[in-house]
Image 1 (spheres, helix red, strand yellow):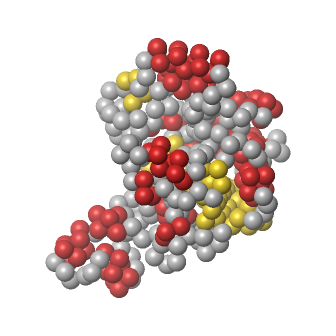
Image 2 (cartoon, one colour):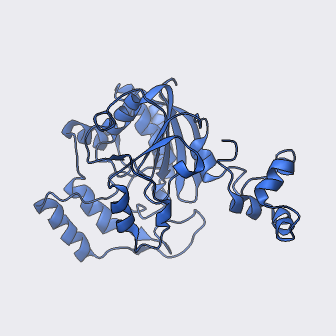
Image 3 (cartoon, helix red, strand yellow):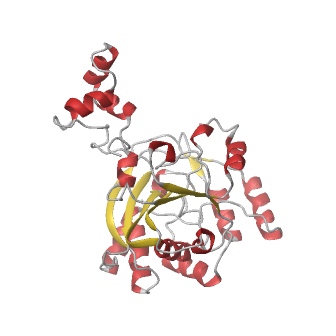
Length: 317
């Protein structure tokens, strides 16, 4: 399992001399150089401080243990074909996912064989057991879940006592959520009491009417392109009517976060005894996303609430 997290392209990009040596035939690959010399030389494995996206998501996870990846679609963090002992949970089965993304310009061969198709039922009910996973990964998932409190509770029930939940979360300041404010604890409490299975009508409208782009629908902090809308008001109106008058599930971002606002939400949930997961490790925003690993055997996250509110407010500028 030692080479699972090695990314050939990242390593060569971070070490141009190695790339030249590989091109000249002096080394079979970047990984061959890394194993023979790079480790001892403390070479950077990528251009982002030595840790790739996968490195951050897998940090402190038991990589030899049994894992669950939720909603990986065509971009799994811990694919089976790289040796991970992992179950895949998604909203469609394998063939349906491949058909869905066939014309989207993505590598459909990266779509994993789906073990569990999720239709909104409680996760332990779908999986058929509890306390069974060493780790769970959910990349760009929690912002879509209509009832986040229940989702976190269900993930906690699936984890072994020392299990970890790894989250990759879009930072609303650097994606199409830019114009919508960070979600509040009260919004999560309302959704929990209502046991929401679908995004509310208002969530659908806010998502579509306010979605924007800055060159693309996600960007880095130093991007200066002009902000423009992704959808027209007529499109927002049409989806609002659809959400009001049908039982269709309309997939949108129900929630928006900055790292600071996530701290506040998690602390509030712990204070209200709705969540017993604590922060194991976090990595600051890179590009449009940040990383948080939660654990069951960690003291719940509670901090000075006024300070967290001030930090959350200051971050959303």
